Image (tube, rainbow, N blue to C red; front, side):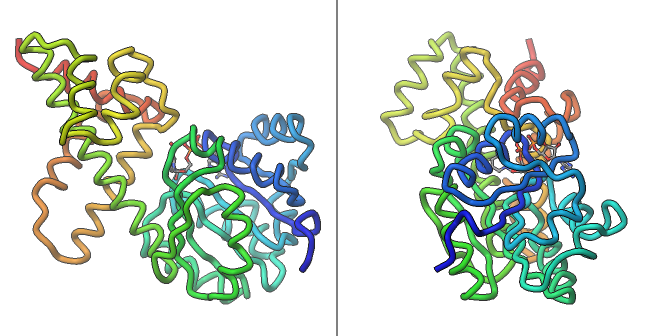
Length: 300
Ligand code: NAD
């Protein structure tokens, strides 16, 4: 088997998640080259660990694997097909595998996979859950959508360097569908938990005590366990997950619900509630700041 230090991996998008994920690949011994629109970010990553920072997307064409960790599927398509006059796709060597680990819209991913296949580049999706803390630990949950078993087998060791649990969810696009629906559940539980906490506060209950009770009771969820105390009650608002990105995911999940033609009133309402929060905040605001908006909307 070819050694990891001989496998060339390009990583595009050295953001909140991409940085620690790329770092885990570098530590695992892959021959890593990074790229980001924000050159200062990719260059400081390079200075920190010694991985190469690419000056142009053309340099990523010679990689065995290219990982994208970008804001959404539109940006992924733009970067792979159009940026710098199509520098990546025009220089991509046949057999190159792109692993899109961003959270993206599944039918867009399937269309991009078809377009890349024409250039003998294979696309698989492998979005993640677990946030910045688990990205740093290399224990992300990874939801894999892949059409080709042998490509998946070759990519698995890279994914294992970043993830703790890998799930095969189906063909290309299935990972992105799974991810959007997971985030719909998470976004719904944040709305529900926020409303319960706002009611608790108005009734005069102590919020830390309330969350302690829920955490050992049937209302227990990820938000009560990991988010509400540190980020909302302590007013840190610093999960590292932008509100704009979460609202994008809730939108993707609602489009998926439309596509499968079903009645889902709660999902519509959750989408509306998050949109309302984003209307009052910047795209880059921490997603937990939605609590402030919903608090301010309450009558005196
Ligand atoms: P981020 O905004 O911190 O990082 C995105 C990076 O992509 C930035 O460094 C940005 O400069 C770069 N970028 C943007 N446009 C580019 C372009 N055209 N070319 C090259 N680079 C470009 O976002 P993030 O929080 O790291 O999230 C990345 C993806 O992961 C998103 O799809 C998000 O929904 C998903 N995600 C985020 C989290 C989280 O907790 N932050 C968790 C799971 C999944």
